[in-house]
Length: 71
Image (cartoon, rainbow, N blue to C red; front, side, top):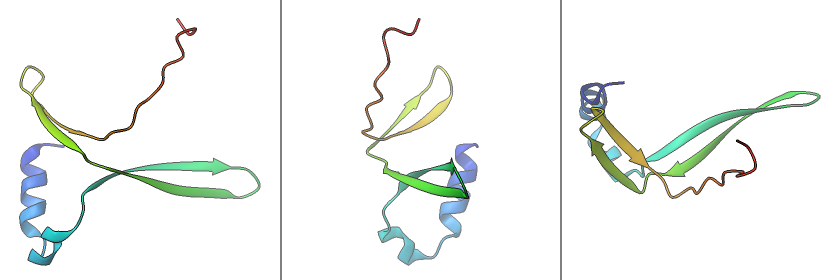
């Protein structure tokens, strides 16, 4: 997705949406007897621009632990 697409979409929203919180939603599935789909929302806590890679980055405070035994 390009930044211009986000900009145009935001500009198309009603003004009262400006008071809404912005989160990053991640979908997942739990498969057992029945399929269950869920959404985990994470607040966006920082934004930055990576000029070298031409990316706008939205960040959250999630810390992902890496198993150091996996090489």
